[in-house]
Image (cartoon, rainbow, N blue to C red):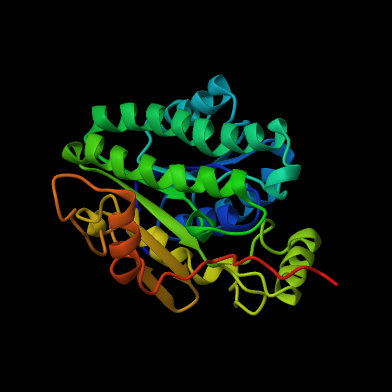
Length: 300
């Protein structure tokens, strides 16, 4: 038990199980009172009881953050029950994996609604309240799928959008002592350990399809990496803003703040011709490029 978050109030979306639950308990151990969230409030009862057993207060709030009014009500619940909001962890979400040519409009839209719209609704409302208080800590859960993966165009697009959301919000809110950071979790959760997901990984491994997370990647239990996120939400992390971290077990890694140009070439004359590009690109910028999904030979 500690007191780094003593007197703080945290809202953690999707906190009835997995990563969200582990975070809720870890933050309570550091003195925070928690708004626990799921679409079904009954799923939150065990988490609330666990937090109360630690001597902290917790309130369960049913909300689907993809619906604007419910997302805003989730944030407002912190003020209604505890008088303020200091911490927001945008964690809720789900998967609807499908290969690009099989993905329906609904499967794409549903993922955007929760990760892009839902996270934004919570972020905007929490950020507004935090500005009034002159303090805040916001964590957006993203994924290494943002770097590219098979069968997850919807999820990867959303998780990449979260990176941009974080970087921009960090600049909007930073001057009011509010930080906004992103986490790539390397933890086992209901999204990463379902039978469907594990079967899909196994098939991709057997076919030697390059992915961001191979079947052999070790996924730690959520409790193994929550301490870093809890620390990010403390006053000690006041200058950590707009950053992206990968956390797994004993490992904490920081990604560059934005894509970095690896090289530049200039046209030999006033403008490029196709022939000049064909001549220079392979020997300069194109040298060493590896196709992450090379064409497969025809099946016999």
